[in-house]
Length: 144
Image (tube, rainbow, N blue to C red; front, side, top):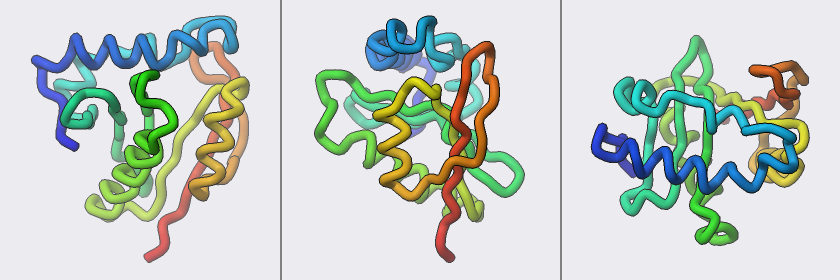
């Protein structure tokens, strides 16, 4: 894993497009990650990518928690544990930053994502609107 650099922006945007396009029909609109400004996110040092750019995670340190803003995996790589690996990396980053918890949100219609996060120890903390979409808010406390 490494931080994305400006030269990676096109590949990052393509990866997000490929990863989230199948969800458009399920959600009924473009998922939130498809609307993000990846130039700004890369420039801010928030986008972490796999060495071969087949997966990424956007991590935003907040007060007492690390926000997992986006996880994207190349659809050709689904089912190989890459998403779980990215989430494990997020936990490592939270610990490195001294943050005791992680939080994320996902669309209420993305049932497979919710199930994955629950299997990783995330618990639902509520539901709310996020940029015109219904989201499930989730959190994971890290053991000391």
